[in-house]
Length: 578
Image (cartoon, rainbow, N blue to C red):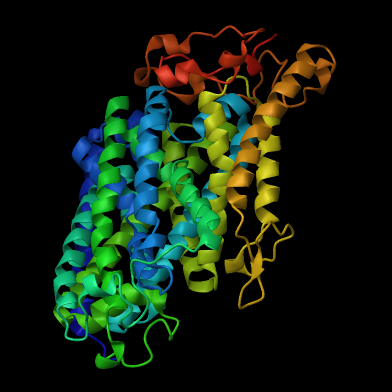
């Protein structure tokens, strides 16, 4: 493979253009936000992100390097095919469900981060516990896509992987540091356009290569390998459902998503953004699906790649850059490379900003320094953006199984944070005791289920488990969804058990060491005035809510305020004197 100077020049020009847009957006932030709300401008863009920019940035956050590379890989791998390319449908449904049920109650309450309602209802310590899986998900996701970018660039222009990862991370961190959400949002518009243009330009050239058989024929007939439409074996149907639910429901409780929701100018806009992004995710997956199909339809021994094919060489995860390199003209492959680079940066910057936002607000400010000035919070965010960006880069360069770590952490987001989010928004009366119990039960069930990507053997072998080629046992049983449901119902049951024991006098008030049931007020819990500014919500949200001593069965398990989006505080009975 030869070093392509033209490709390097193209990448440099692309990166400089992205950096210029990020700097311009940072300047716009500085000139449109007042000195007193600079931190909020960085986190939620001053809550004036419009439909066009908001739709682009929410779509670009999901359509990352892992999304397009992973979709192409799933379609290409024999025996899996399009049937196992779950990300496009799964993430699109996730955005639809988020828009229907979660966007409006979160935005109407004027929260600043996803963790705000948890700290309001469950207290500072529980917010800190939930920050751990949220941080792991964001950091390992950023590291995984930085790693994918380095490998992609090295395939096409034969440049050192480490250099490409460091430069890409440096640019993404730099404009995020300067402008926060404004820089991320406006660069996402440019990056999404590059992804769309770069991949669609590449598809016709790759499809017309002499070594490529008609993809309509290879979709249903065995030519070079199994048909790329794929199939779902009856033994694997529960695994397929488990993974699909993980993508669909586990794709909701991410700060990167709620950051866009909370930056919208209104609750209705937040819903519309989610629906626009769902459509955008489907559209942006089409060229990746076609590239995977092209890879499955190619006689690789008739190309410069030679024999054996990418699957035999264990390079199936690199099928997208391989197709760009060997089936497209050189100048076209550089357009595709720009698309992959744009996809990676559009997701990585969001993850870094999300992690720093949660730390600065929910850990530093609300847990330790509630009287911190706005300037202090801005500097904490800047420092953590640098630290988290450097950490993600280091993991991408040093960790041998960063994808395995990301899979595990994304599972924890689904199993731990999603059921907690359901309880805090829609289930009345849950408290810190239930939240901690649900957290621990979900965590234990997930860890004991094993993780093949990390060669972690399961301690609990559910029905249908089997050893793979590395003698690591894989689960066919949908144990991730079982762990999520266990966490959800444990939260409810333990919460009501604790409430009954304290209110009936079975347990004395002094044993309420978390101040979750009988304490009238505790510094551990956040009130509405601490969490949001009065100009973001209507005044009656600040009114106290009387504790309920008797609840009907229907009112116990249904938070009507959340469904009707009435502007009233969440259930605060655990912080009031009963």
